[in-house]
Length: 588
Image 1 (tube, helix red, strand yellow):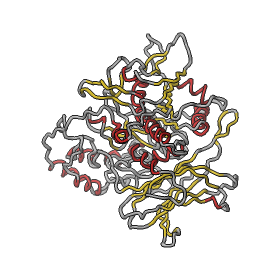
Image 2 (cartoon, helix red, strand yellow):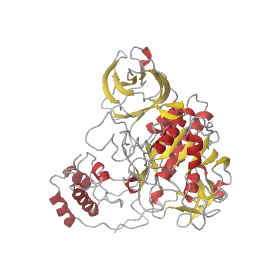
Image 3 (cartoon, helix red, strand yellow):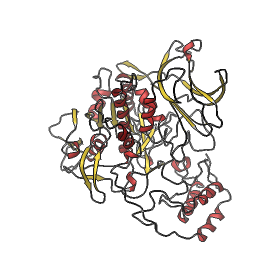
Image 4 (tube, helix red, strand yellow):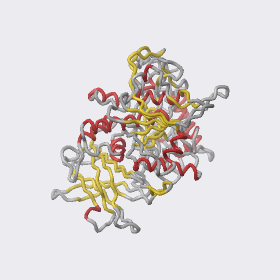
């Protein structure tokens, strides 16, 4: 896609010399130790304090860190001696026993375990003060696996023991594509269906470290997680989130054309120290990492499973249902668009290549879960979910499932709908993928006779096992969702089980970043005009980075090109400040 910058260069240079600087504004300090409130965790726990993970088992699969050559050890363990883990219900620890390389604590693993299981009423950090540290599911049963053990003992062959984990959190990966890597990648993916386990993995830390979506998050059945951009300086950047940066969060499509990641979460976090019994730490460079975004989504999945079991909701803990609920509850941040950014919607690409379905919002997903399973026709409000079977034989009456929304959809409101199903694997020797069934999701108007009338929107990817509709309604009308099976001439008698989640909302939050704030200092000013000019220059060169070609930073109105409309949008936001701008630091 070519990027154009039409009739804007002279205007930018003129504005650069005319505009004046702004006076310093100061922000209030942020005392939240982590960004879990940004993804709805704090809001949910406030109204449902019994959701602590007590009915859930969560596994952490951790890759050993490279240790000091003078002190060789197997650094993959969370610091179990830290006060935040004094209550931890550790049910299993799995690794290769090597007397010459004993296991030891890892900062990476300790941070991730803190996000999931940590709980400390006496936490403190210099510059932040005293606070209560609470992970997402502190009462969950925990299993810790060393990654190489898990690959060769659990994922490499079909005879491996059944996993006892409801959720697996994975924060490592590779962009290799050799036969050995694909062999264990298929094993990871197959375990989701075989053992009914929600598997969540970080998608990779962007173009700074990966050439594409990393494995195992590459898997069809794995929930792949990218990192939102953190905004402001510490401690504001623990809370405020914006769209991902391509250099920090890997983006799709995959090498076979699928949408990944599936979701994003806050990738800058604070957690227990691996070198202390009570201290806390964070990345000093304030970078966001998918390593720390993945356990937030894993924890969100665990909360939903806990809620389904506490409320005895049949099928509410099915991995397909959990995935559909998480994707459907997500918030679309600034610039969200199916596929690459351009002026057209793309029905063949269900998700955004950087954000997936958006920033996870477990509160919204929980509300959809509790709205109840809805068989056709749906009942109650325009919100709910279903787990159902669909025939791939067009002559079968079960080849179509219709979900009539009980309430009219009002003008300006949004309808979200997400469809998920498994890619199944051959269970013979080693795992091999079977052909992917093709399903289609449609949104129709319903006439006065209760019949489908006009097709409003649809999602029909030939390669993904997820479909997603995000529709803004223009006029009051009744609507219905339709799930169709695309005929498979090679397997006409096949059925596919799918999960569908849907909800109606009146508005949506786009994150904490202003579109015109290109330099991310929280203020739209002359520095952003200079940044817009630099982006124009870069996109006009043949050697522009791929990430910049696909997601030009100066494309403020997200239409796929840099032109006068972007400058106009910037000027409309002139001198506006983000909530995290004013503060404990001044704009120079």
